[in-house]
Image (cartoon, rainbow, N blue to C red):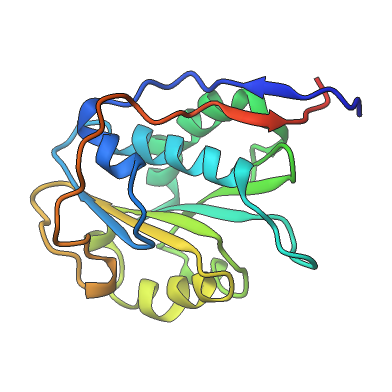
Length: 198
């Protein structure tokens, strides 16, 4: 590995609608928007720079992030191609069978899961994750499985759903009641100081 620093710019320009989401400071977030609005693309592109820039504490294992859909096949269809496409400049390893990518510089892993097999989620830790169509998941998936996975490292969950499902079942996944201000320019999404093998 060379000592050269490579600046990586992701191929993503956020829609104005998603600027408050990308600029949020809250640990918990919820997004409600109509179909084809771009929720999945925004969420995938929010996880990638977080995973790449995660500051690991001494003794911590690499970062872990999850994109969880109601069904594994649905989550794969919706998010897997986006994850590979947008994370491509940072991918150091990937597994097509288990649906994960590891990204530079610390080999943080982003994985696609399905809530239809909640026992597959148990036992791991998470630094963050997206619960896509959260209202379609079993009610205990978040409280019994996801929340404990996030608690060790104070991970940040995001619940996204279509407008027909306006209220998340658990209040800790609800957004802050005050609207987030829009910023005039999109947030920086290039990740400075990333060292890669390329």
